[in-house]
Image 1 (cartoon, helix red, strand yellow):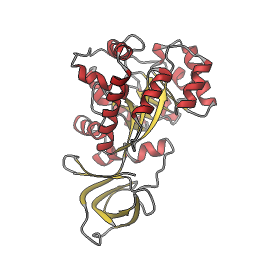
Image 2 (cartoon, rainbow, N blue to C red; image 1 turned 60 degrees about the vertical axis):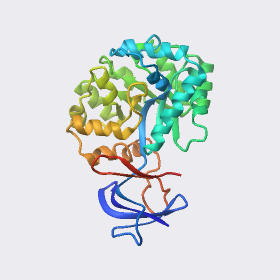
Image 3 (cartoon, rainbow, N blue to C red; image 1 turned 135 degrees about the horizontal axis):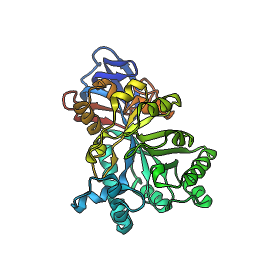
Length: 337
């Protein structure tokens, strides 16, 4: 049996101790020193959950082109530069980029990621291909090829994915989004949408869609956030990506209103897919959360919010954990099935 020791992140905070594991399962835990020399010492945390990615645009990093720092020019559906580049890229190019981002997440300790998958049915197939022989779990949130509701297309998308992840209501005719959201909910799948990233959008219209979680909410005001909190809907923040466009989420207001905040890395063409890089950035640029709280927001909090398994880092649970250097958050050791 192998051991790791140090400080263990639990739902109740950091506690000194050790974990003993073998055959991809935790066998024992303790609060003293391990029975024999550990394979690694450091900060022991559950594997990470990256709540928002777009890894289809990973290939764009290699093009060495100057990207516009305006949200609409770069990522607006369907005419932003990103979407034009996706349309002109080859299948091989897109899948190769996806594989690189998947590898980056895996080697940095992410075991689950939620990807907003552009490209309709073909986009799902690209990601499914890229995921072959990978240990990581992906929640694929697909979207229609065009900005219209097509009953048959949505049926196929929902059969092949975990749900729908749309761009903002500002990109759509609202009636079309309504139909998609209702169809998704009827099938018991996840529905999520970008909200108030570039401009403030009508929160009542957004909440009427009954989203499972929202992304960004940078331009939301206090009353919007209160409504989100009252409806118990998590908000996924991606501050590094926002900063590229000169945007900054009001984390202080979000904390004040009690919104359930989770984190993602957003567009792979802009920033790394390493979620630890995201919380390192937040730690250095925002003062609202402690280091321990930030770690919980990429481990326990997303699992709880989306009803994933929270029985982790305990005897008989899978040996899914990461050991970090507490000083610089370098990954020292990863155990993942």
